[in-house]
Length: 291
Image 1 (cartoon, rainbow, N blue to C red):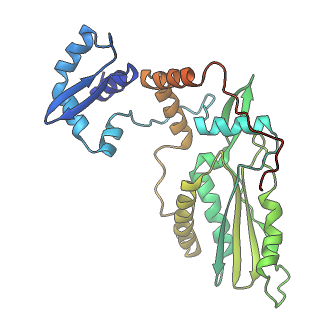
Image 2: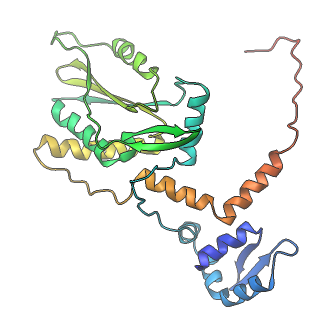
Image 3: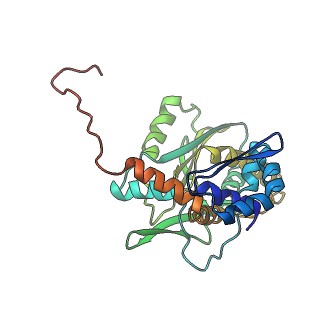
């Protein structure tokens, strides 16, 4: 067992360590410090002190196992966040609360084919954008399509008329696409559209479901889109390196962490706190309330 794993094991037992002045301070529940654990603490003292004295970011990364690529020949687990959102979709089919969208206004001459190819390459690079969700007796799993045929839905000033679309007209075109439900089992969970405002102005709109996209994803998406569009419009290949791991690998890694003693200890704690009879909040309902 690595020192970082030993530290995680201790946390699961409620044993807390701290490094003060080069010394190891131990705080533990009654009976938790067995003779075996005491021997391990003595043998690993220097390593534990060095680990605890490290910056928080370095300590966190050192205490976690690396993310590894998992085989794709079996059913892929969902991350906890994906499962939570999937459950809400099962509870209320067609819910649109988890619809997300990215919008980018593009000014100047546009190479539509290069832009469409760039979005398609992002979907190729990131398996999660090609993912749908099925279940077997209530247990969900991911299915990753080999490819996603990205085709823009073309909207707006398509007949080349002289007047430009107003912002209100653009909103009227996009609003129904924001509120269109996603089918998590059939997909796709990414729907791109391109609004032509005029010959030299467009709006790129991509609706995407929160099971495969989040706020951090937006930054990744636009960075890669700019790099890929510039390359493809110039007749160059993709400048981006292949990804070492995918989101499904992260989900499997997260599930493995969930099986360790530290996680189980946290789970048991909250089951105890939230168990039993739930409190009832008695609010008076016979009086008018402000909006």
